[in-house]
Length: 220
Image (tube, rainbow, N blue to C red; front, top):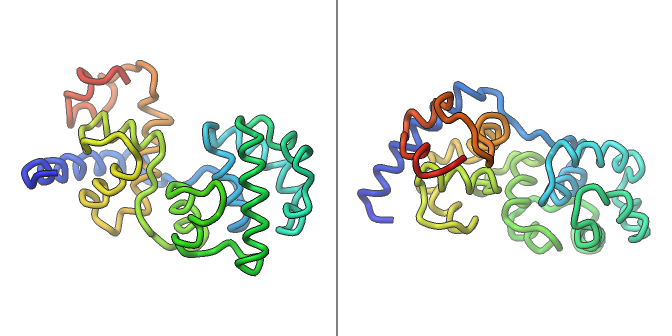
């Protein structure tokens, strides 16, 4: 990113985030969980699913499986049925059950609190790792980039890339470090409750007024 473009995008994102703070001053994670292990599982289940759907699943799941040992001893076929509604249930079952076994065998039964260790767990990429670190341990290791964030970045011309890893690197240059752990929640709320992926009335979107090209260039 050339210096001029970097400077322009910093100013734009600052204005956009000010508006987001007014719209969603208390934005926070909407997945329900009671401990780091439950958070890890909930985030893994949320891939290609909605937080609302995952919360319905985990309401029963977390009552059935209360400890790490419960997950380690889980029957894969039965677990598949337990999380069926989340989609991609076979792959998620395989990753989650492998992850809990690794947590038991290599991390003393405690979900790790470093990015390097978390990324070793099956099914855990940077998105899941950064969420677990921030929400479970208060550790900010980067900016969580999900589909809402990718769409936001493209809509408001904040990066030249489309993949999450490169977008995160760009955002880390644009966003003050003190905001890294919070801006994602505001963007997710924006995409979830005001600016969905489908066509909507952009005339009522205060962020589009900041960057009018968003209404012309993107349908959503």
